[in-house]
Amino acid sequence: MPTLPVPLLRDAVARETARMSLRGAAEAISISPNGLRNFLNGAAPRSATRLKLERWLAGQGRVSRPPSVGQLVRLLNELSGDLSPKQTAQLGRDIAELLAEAYETRRLEPPHWVQALLRHFRPRGKAASEVA
Image (cartoon, rainbow, N blue to C red; front, top):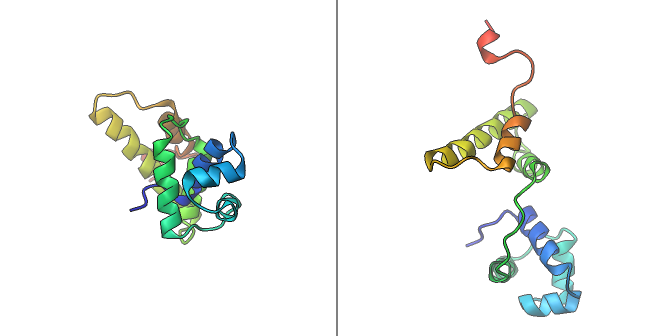
């Protein structure tokens, strides 16, 4: 069962394979070099390929850098293509608040990327309490 959204998977695989040759990376993942190249260039992977990519990535044992606000906003925009900009912004606020609440429930300080996401999606203009 796939766990990562394809754009995040592509970014993580690209970072990990950047230190290797295309053929070496493809061999390590157990896919063809053309399949890896196509995936890294934006092609949607077949489910079997996606599973191989995720398993290989998990086996690398590296802690990936935390997501950037830009990556999360791009992903949110991709996921909410059928929503209005106002609905997309509200969805972003809801996700950011949910993440912050999850950390606080565990008595943990929300990481910097969650705080940055909260700031990014903070409503601009008049506060909701000021609107009649």
